[in-house]
Length: 424
Image (cartoon, rainbow, N blue to C red; front, side, top):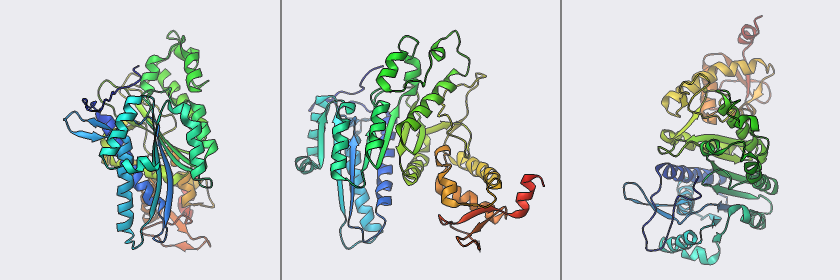
């Protein structure tokens, strides 16, 4: 597959951005704004610090199919920082300013793209940030610069290690698994937004190039030579291969929380994962909100409820060669999720007779559900109103909760319902 889609030269024609790339940028903007709002927890807070690494930054400016000029990911990131700061000041009605200590590191192996980006940054009013070092540009492969970038994050944030890596690679082999592991091993609070063109990979893999793929990516053992041998492939081989790749990527990275949604691509460009890897469930919840907001462009293939993301599979046909149903993140999917959770929650609580804290209940399932915390809370409150379950305080007393749950509220099946589920 091609290594790059775009070319830049200052004063020349801008490259045309693909529609699904515009959607990715829009999701990135929304995610960053909401993410910053979660970092500012108090009107008395004076500073937040974050390093953002755009590992495949491009030239900073594109033209859409309609002929409209649109920003690339570095400008989107900077605009999101400005928007978040304005919203913090307004929503918290601050009199005192808050310092957004954000450094943006932009990396691209194309020197002409980096030079074009620097010109765009000057043109868009970010020249002073370039000269002060708040924005840094590097020419080279992300993988080759990863160690130095991690060291810079640790220098800036030795205690929190807070950083966001935007890794919009063009294929599937430019961010090897050892590099992801290095990020999560070296830093305390990293996040990674990673694209992975799984459709292109499955079209490329063969018995002959499997070992080369493993050397390039570090994803050894995820795919076997038998999987690639057309003589032995069953109709479900894509299910098996994608499931193994997904598990290897997510658990192998060292991240505790992950969100594997598929971007619905432009025609002819294949399916790819948009993986969000993090160390905190709140970050995952913010990303899930962003996906629901952009539901016209994101899908996942599987059932609703708490068992959706066990494989990360998105082949277009199932074992019986029928179109696989897509979870569309729309109103129908929302209603389906609520119905599924209202059925599954009592079944889970039937195995936890002593009850379970609401936060623990959600966090235990956050990696395998499309639902946000607010959606799970809605399902729980509906079951409370229907007298299926009850809510206890931390002292064991019954709480009459109607509108909102607290993290330490204990969810427990009502006694009569418990007897019915156990068949007593």
